[in-house]
Length: 126
Image (cartoon, rainbow, N blue to C red; front, side, top):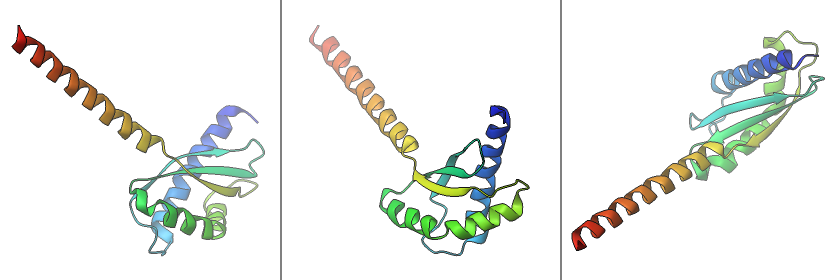
């Protein structure tokens, strides 16, 4: 199976899983503070890793637990929505890339501020 087809299927799985979670799940632990960042479907379409980014750190554990508990329902709904031979087994993984990016942006901003203050102090001494 071509990599291009797997990539298209992975993106479609990502979109459909996101829609299923937002539209069909009634679990109060799942609210709008998350994002499905990507999905990786294996070449045989048997498994799909779903990467979930949670914006509020204190809600991460409960949301991941809720998704783990609902993965059978999500898989069944995915099978109804997509026309593929197998409905992949879903594995939800906490994705901290966005959180890491925000951290790096803060560190860079602090560094720039510190350099500006150091330059200002240097000029005042001259």
